[in-house]
Each structure stands twice: as structure tokens, then as C-alpha cells.
Length: 409
Ligand code: HEC
Ligand SMILES: [Cu+2]
Image 1 (cartoon, rainbow, N blue to C red):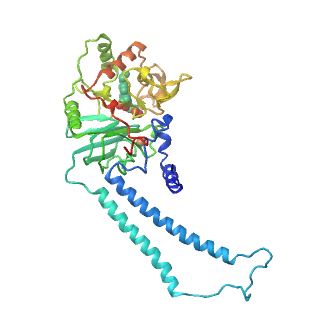
Image 2 (image 1 turned 90 degrees about the vertical axis):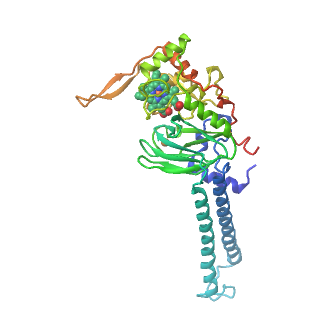
């Protein structure tokens, strides 16, 4: 049960961030992002400050509100009596200037504000201090509408899933690549604006292993609310294992005919944008799809990545969207066919032959041009190929999500 004051704080904070409405599993009623549930030293610090300031504010409210109430009760006009006039015997004492009272009314607020600013300065210093034992430095780039996590020193990238060692300080260098985004994992730390041409640093440290949720906190376009990500905190040994496997990954050459077909489709249509380690092509401005099969979600955390579409259901919290007039749970194949139909404003081209507008370089006019059309067979093959790209022995799908239901365990 929430206490009224807690409810009040929740109300204020959630109104401001709208975090709750945007969670990937809103349908299951689980709270995945919880601003009042610190899971790291930094968020504990911030939480402490919030409570200190909250308690001070509450005391001020009680004292000033109480005084006002007392005065109103004492001096209000009662039924059957006429309003007090100057000179009446029940007129309150009239005075002008009272040094003691005025010193008190100035001194107390100054004291409160000073105490709060000292607390704030201390919390700020603690939260932003860079520890000497940073375990990993990761470049975070916000794009419309997804996150690129570049493990620069290790030489690989991972999109939309930030894998970190638990219990260790990790330094994030946050930047934006098109418009301004904002990176934030409410349970682990503060937010950092992701601004093009600028790097804002943030230290996060997850107290325990598990999956935490983050999202973009700056209105950045049509799918701003669909710009989520996950933080996967692993025990140190598992993290090291993941890093060495991700580093060593090279796309295998499949012998299975469907996967071989998928690889061909990928090389002909996708590898101009998407990098897969071991294949030619790709650009850093698009999600890296190496070991895509080991990701738990795709499209910036909004769809669950499963080996078999029959695992998807609305009851489990998977998103259903109207596709060609019919509402159904979104599959990877739907995504590839026409991603903008399932994620508004997605900048990935469709592969269903639908029309879109392109500016003619010579005439300067906008013209309707069809997208490439891939057969269902090709779409199924390329989806199967992507699912087959796995890091052996890595199974993030088994890691518990940290939600309101298991957070305190
Ligand atoms: C013009 C560049 C471009 C091409 C070509 C392209 N994509 Fe994409 N793709 C994108 C962009 C941009 C995104 C990010 C969209 C978002 O999440 O908002 C994306 C996202 C994805 C994702 C989700 C990745 C993740 O981790 O969230 C998958 C899977 C994907 N594309 C598969 C494909 C396949 C398969 C093809 C070829 C049939 C393809 N793409 C062709 C630009 C491209
Ligand atoms: Cu954004």
C-alpha cells in the first residue's frame, strides 16, 4: 500500500516524466521503471535528498498551514455576530514592526534553504564524482529512434541493450547524433542529455545483476515514446565472458538452405545500413545486428525478440498493433516488412513495395516511388537468419527483469 505522501510524490514525478505509460510491459501491470526505487548508490543518494527536501517541505506546510488555520479559527466571524470593526473590544491587537518576529521569519527560511543547499551540493558531488576504478567506458549515441552502445575500447557495438558488469562503476559518454535525446535509467542514475556534438558523462553502477529499463526523456520526434532500452547487468565473470564472445564474433556461413537464403537477402538489401561482424558493409549510423539473436528485444526495446513467434502474446505484454486494418501481436517479420507501420516514424525503409516520397535531385520535386518488395519467403528467411546470429552460451532471456514485484528480494 502506498502512503498518501508517497502517492503525492509519485503523482508529481510520474506526471512530469510520463514514464509509466511508456513501459514495454504496461499490459502486465508490472512497474518496470520506478523513480522511487533506487538500485544504485547514486539513486540512493538522490532518493535521500528527495526525502530530506520532502520532509522539510512537509514541516513548512504543517507549520504555516497550521498557523493560518489557527488564526482563521480564532478570528473568523461566527454566526449571529457582526464582523469585527476597529475599536471593538474583540479586535485583535494591532501592531507594526516586531524585530524578534521578523528576524525569526527571515532566519528560519534562510536556515532551511542553507541546509538543503549543503545537502544538494554534497549529493551532486557524490553522484557526479568519477571513481578511480571505472570498469568499462561505453559511448552512448542517441539516434531517431534507437540507442547505439559502442564499446569503443573492446571494438564492438551493441544496439538498444546496454550490457554492464554489476556492482562496478561504468562510465557512459552520452551524445546525440541527429536531434537532442536524453538518456536515463531511473533506477540506476540520473539523466544525461544526448546532444549532437557534445559529450555528457554519466556514471552508473547497478547494485545487483538483472535487467533494468531506460528510455529517452527528451521529445525527439514521432517515436520518442518508443525509444526505450534495457540495461543488462551481469555478474563480473559472465560479463567478461560476454565481452570476449562479442569481441570474437564472426558471422558464420550457414549451411541450412533457408538461412543461406536469408544471408543472401541480407547482403542484397540490408547490409548497406546494418553492420554484422564478419560481413561486408554497414554504417555506425544504423543498429549493429551482429549476434542479433542474443538480444532480448528489438526496435529500441519495444518488441520482444523470440525464437518462435508462437511465444508472443498480448497477455505476456507483447505489443499488438493494427497491421493492414487488423490488430495483432507484432513479429520480426512485420517489422522487416514495414517498420513504420508498427513503430511510427521509423527511419528504416519498408520492404513491402509500398509507396513513399523522394525528392528528385534534378527537378527538385517530390515524387512517389515504391520501396523494394521482398517476397514473404525472403522476409521469413532474413528474419530466420537474424535470429540465428547468436553468441554461444549467452542467454539473456533467462535473466529476471527487475520490476516492482521482485525488486526488494
Ligand atoms: C536505409 C538503411 C536501412 C536498411 C537498408 C535496412 N535497415 Fe533495418 N534499421 C534501420 C534503422 C534506421 C533502424 C532503427 C529503427 C528504429 O528502431 O527506430 C533499423 C532497425 C532494424 C532492426 C532492429 C534492430 C534493433 O536492435 O533494434 C532490425 C532487426 C532490422 N533493422 C532489420 C533489417 C533488415 C532485415 C533489413 C533488410 C531487409 C534492413 N533492416 C534494412 C535502417 C535500415
Ligand atoms: Cu529520443
